[in-house]
Image (cartoon, rainbow, N blue to C red; front, side):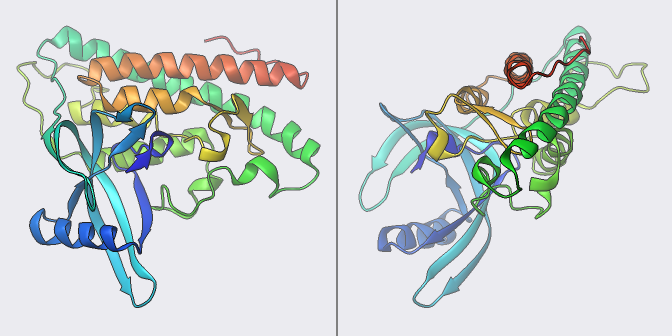
Length: 286
């Protein structure tokens, strides 16, 4: 089981070191009987969250006396329908969750419009964070201290060692590519292809709806810290985790897109507030 602040979404990875006997047994069970696929059980105060990321064991390395080093990647999501075993590790019956696919051209057009708004909002927030970055780094005196290491656990988003050097827009594009690359749902829709050269496929839209939540993740040490400003200018809030959990349980792209817009609007408000606190103002209205 994982704490909810470690929730992964489509395309994201996590590195684990398995050394307890029960988790070594779980690993062998997953590899021998489930094709290397495991669900990521998320633990909240009241028990296990009903929705869970479905992960594929992408790579592993057994090392004598150190255990097994494993990389898992989210390839889908499931609803947990019942627990069948809790010792020595948790097993459950699960049902894979598939997105509700829009069947009307108007719905696809609306999704496309929302996707454009998400991309514009991401660029705006990224520009705001660039301004905040200079002030925060100057105040800290030197790089590499305090909040700079919030996401430097060497266990998340390990697809690219340079990910931590990317701004929010860069991280969004990277997350979009990975979400699309790992999307194996397949989409059958009665909608007709539109006339626009800028039309996006349903797979493109789905990837955008996931990537919107994947530009940061709250570190467990700061889970109760409210709003945290990292040295790279990124504003993180305890609500980020809740938005991830809601996205995981979403019925389909439309719900997730609308949730993403709400999440990014709040992020813009938080970043605007952080700018004001250091005497800066962002003039561009969206």
